[in-house]
Image 1 (tube, chains in turn green, yellow):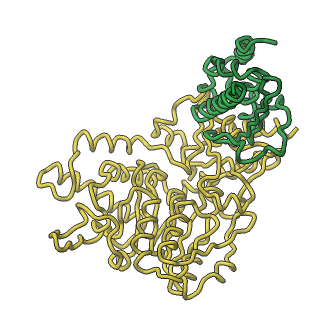
Image 2 (image 1 turned 120 degrees about the horizontal axis):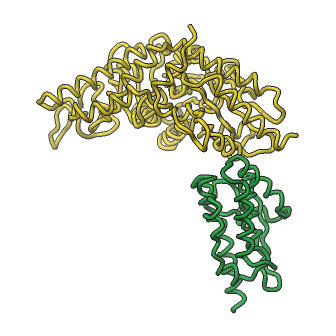
Image 3 (image 1 turned 180 degrees about the vertical axis):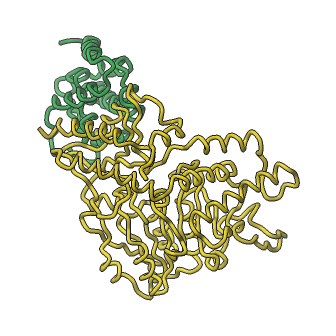
Amino acid sequence: MSTITDIQNEIVAEFEILGDDRESTIFYIMELGGNLEPYPEDFRKEEYIIKGCQSTVWLLAEEKEGKIHFQADSNTDITKGLISLLIRVLNQRSPKEILEADLDFIPRIGMGNILGSQRSNGLVAMMNQMKRYALAFQTKQNT
Amino acid sequence: MPIDVNLIRNQFPLLHQEVNGNPLIYFDNAATTQKPKMVLDAMHRYYEVDNSNIHRGAHTLADRATQHFEDARESIRAFLGARESAEIIFTRGTTEGINLVAKTFGSTFIKKGDEIIISTLEHHSNIVPWQMLCEQNGAVLRVIPITDTGELILEEFEKLLSSKTKLVSLVHASNALGTINPVKRIIDAAHAVGAKVLLDGAQSTSHLEIDVLKLNCDFLVFSAHKLYGPTGLGVLYGKRELLEAMPPFLGGGEMIQDVTFEKTTYANLPFKFEAGTPSIAEVIAFKPALDFITSTGKTTIHQHEHALLQYTVELLQDVKGVIPVGTATEKIAVFSFNIQSMHPFDVGQLLDARGIAVRTGHHCTQPLMRRLGLEGTVRASFAVYNTLAEVEVFAEAVAKIAKLKNK
């Protein structure tokens, strides 16, 4: 399995191909949302909504054999695309790996510049929520 | 006579820039309009030459600043066709104007069991102050329903009217949909039962001819920044007899006649409602904004903006996936829409990538959005400096986005 660094480098390379064309970049991000596995309807509840995002984002994390499996959905396509990137990097990894991950692909692809500060902050909120899940599972593993 | 848009655009420095590698297309005019150079110059000149506190300074600068300030008030009076400039009260904006009336007229003349009528089209700023008043004094809020096209159902309004109605507080033109309400008819019907009428003119004053005497509204509120003027400044027009009967809003300097520790007597109109140092530069710079509107001509402005709206509708009406929201017969130049299977935020973001500025979301009209069964819309709103060529770029961009999900 590729490392977190490998996958981040892949993402950065994909975005580099798009260059400065903002419209194409956003179209591309929207398409990425299609890669998300369908979100289980039973978990489309208030307690799974991430605070700090302007659009609605549901995030579910389950631990199986020491790895965390993330599922997510959003009411906007751009946000779905963004969260699919985070899931691509962090899915099926141990809590330790997730907690130690330095997610530098967000600034490296210039997300703040492409999508503005509100959406970029939302992306950080999603990342933090994923790390909080990892911390919770790690604490559980250690007790 | 058709207007020379290029000549007008030359007066607006901000419009001449690129956003995200494209010429800026500013279609968020219902949120705020851009400012002509004469407004910017007036603000600059005030601080560079005349800056001084007004009304009581015994020196030349104070006298000059006061003169310019009161000239602006007189311009606003003329703009609205009011009887006297004492009926023109400066506020921080439309929201403050409505709150002022709710806190002073409302708390004095509206009692438990009395009724206030608003409509489904209202902006939150014409809902929340009345809810707060009703919570405080036990008055009841009634709401005029709308049709699916976004027009008031007048028969229902007439049913709501009774001797209990003390105030009808109504938006003149809807910010979210553009609907122009038949306010004259509503004002007359309200007066027939002895109710007063407040008009929220935030969206109408820059587009439509306003004559407060002909309309016979009791209050009219609006914001300068939506009429090519500075931010942080609003106007409340009120009939003298009402303003006289209302208690002051805020206490402090400027609004007093005499203060002792035992008792304070209040200043005459309009100063009774203008506690503290006002937004002097903004007031002074609002005059050239009104001059700009008057010299361009409201009818000309309305015709031009209407042509922009018509052209937008024409270009987008047959585009698969584009759903116009709010299709009233009488509209100001607001085109609200959704794209099938897309969130308005995403549409807004894609348009921004092309340098097109629009508003997305609920437009501070959540009850209206709920009534229409929508989370929000994308709103393009036009001003006098927008062009048919810009509409073409916008329509092409919208069609391209619509095609994504509606093949």
